[in-house]
Image 1 (cartoon, rainbow, N blue to C red):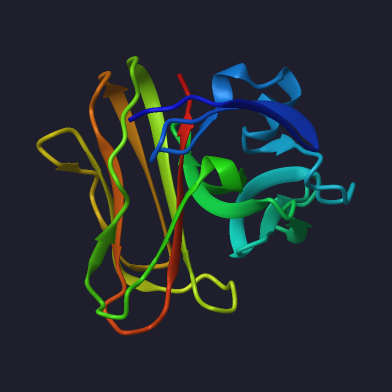
Image 2 (spheres, rainbow, N blue to C red; image 1 turned 60 degrees about the vertical axis):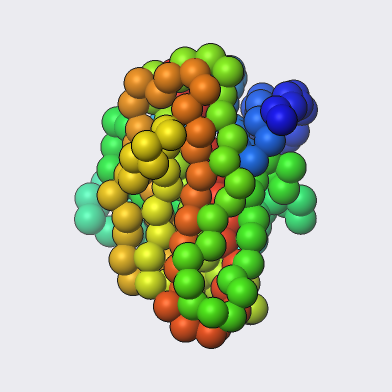
Length: 214
């Protein structure tokens, strides 16, 4: 069963999000010009407030609630400064990549727009319920980050996502604490699900979401 929710939020700038049950989505094509620019790397950014380091290179989840923005000097290329930005309490950090840039880029996903599930102590593979879009999507970015009890990113045995009834796997990641893949030419109705395996009895929480680029 699918449901659709549109909500407005402010995290520096306005964006529009669309939800399908089991598949959290942040839709970039409806963002304002300013927000779209902030999602592009190698640009002067509000997330790099130090005038000596104004160019945003990448961003990663430092903790469940903090994004670390890696900012570069425009005068001395190759020198950097890290700017930590707290997510809103109703948001969680998820690591992504974009279709036009392989540099990591983290996003504070609203709690309503993410999928979150915990390990069960067996170390085996655990997956979300499958969900699907009702319309075609040209480019999707899948993101997932795993956290320990202290809200710090933690390495797990494997992470992956599946698309379609034939369970097309999007190249799993091994021994990482984050996962992001680009999927092109999504066809309406194809089910999507995320999976991870801890590989031990440790308690781990996985947080996943999807960015729509076109």
